[in-house]
Length: 332
Image (cartoon, rainbow, N blue to C red; front, side, top):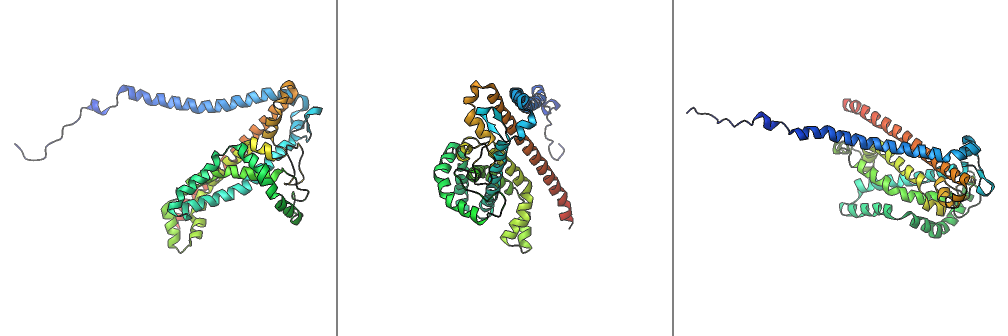
């Protein structure tokens, strides 16, 4: 018998091929997933078409541009101008982003880079628990506790910085600023969570390279982590903005429900979501009023889609720019 290694038995060719049923399962699964993805688009399109149909009586009675850009919302007189509602929605959402996003980014930086290991998990859970608080609780806390406590500070700020636009004027409770501050607290968990996940994906080599070149911990965060995470931070901010635009109960409680364009951030106002929540019950017997409220919902739907579309475009461009800059950095 010849010496040498014993040849291992070869599996028959039929054993290497997947069963026929599994081969057919791949295209079937692909078709199911494609149908589910397409179903989401169909559902969004159905929502849009249905809102347009239901809002048509309001647009036919007042005209689209007159409805959107008129500043008179007086249901008792049959006047429905949505400009104060759009204005209040955008102002409170902008205040929420200006306050909430920097705090959320700072929280994410601390939890990922600076927090002691034994405290990281408890603090993360505490921040995420903010998202579990019902919005009505935020609203009641804001109107009964936060707004009265902030009143002296708001008066001081309005008097001291009266030269700034949209600041001078009497201070009322509730107002745009309190609503925006409540929204900032509500969007903080989602922005912080997404930002934290993005920062955790920064390659360890980037951080070590910055530190090896003599950068301090803060300089490493500024030069290695924040630029890498910028597209994700932008996407998280836009998700927070979508949350702020659509919030209803908390804003209804703390914004003042005055269908006017306020002179300052400390004036009372209204929002698209708040007016729908407040008036839809009494509009059941008035078809025009009901159509106007549905038209307000359509405006909110369109504003949210446009803002998210713009945000998605920005995130895609930022990601493309980041990918293009990698070879240049490596070449240098």
